[in-house]
Length: 397
Ligand SMILES: *Cc1c(COP(=O)(O)O)cnc(C)c1O
Image (cartoon, rainbow, N blue to C red):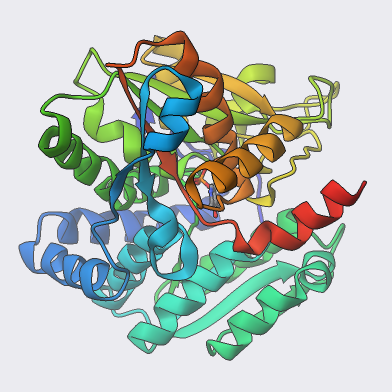
């Protein structure tokens, strides 16, 4: 692929976002953008998506008042938005159903995706099984070997998993392979992206499909307590579950928003994946955002206890929220997330995903500083069954 950059005008959030891609990807991305503009305002599309969200994914997800946890912390009332109860166990299904239905409307016969830990791959394979579409998931060979159970799940669901053996055989190489496929085959193939990142139009598309979280939460909290919350708290990898909760409250100035980044084991290079806390504005992966770079200006290595948060950048809309002060972003360490994982499990009987445990950890810190009539909504992005084995190994040490 050629490397010259061309920025599209649409899709900016202040200085962030945009589309900085090789020329070969301009037409494929414009093709998706145009199709999305068309279906976005088509009531029959929204109706079809709503049908699957309700009868297939199980929406609306409950907004649960975690009374025992709130009482033990002695401060704000904590409400959990239960995305963990969705089919396949996280918020990811909201987005993949939307994108797979869009693909179908566009007449695509084939869907491709890339995945690191495998969760987005499994979600995409699920939507493709449901909608009877061919599905190809690119995965670095090293990742595929580590996540063999997720590979098996995808194959059970009828997807073809392509193990990418180039370079480091990780997510980066899987993304390159998926983009090559997309550039060559975009007339028949739709690329399903898993978070609110990447070049325009993907951050807009993913935000829109995940906004069902915030729309529901807004209605539910008004029904339950008759007023808007004081705080929204969500974990941030690429930022899709967080922007899905935050965006519908954007204009409500009294509602404060906190994104919880993976603080890992420390602030040093390679010890975390907290792009806003420790990064700088830069162009990576086709868009401008806060990103973690090394001394040479290359994308830095990252790490997190939660595979789903292990990304060196953050979505452009979050970058804009940070730059303008609309939301704040905090780093939550691996240890704090591990502790919160256990606290929520014991006090409420809910095992959170290690990703979501980052948001729970911040809630545990923040709630005692607030009064008992204040309200906090914490996005429980996923369930932790997938992490039980990893936590067992960590606790044995
Ligand atoms: C993938 C994942 C995340 C991180 O993705 P975002 O796009 O930042 O939401 C968070 N929680 C769970 C449970 C996930 O599976």
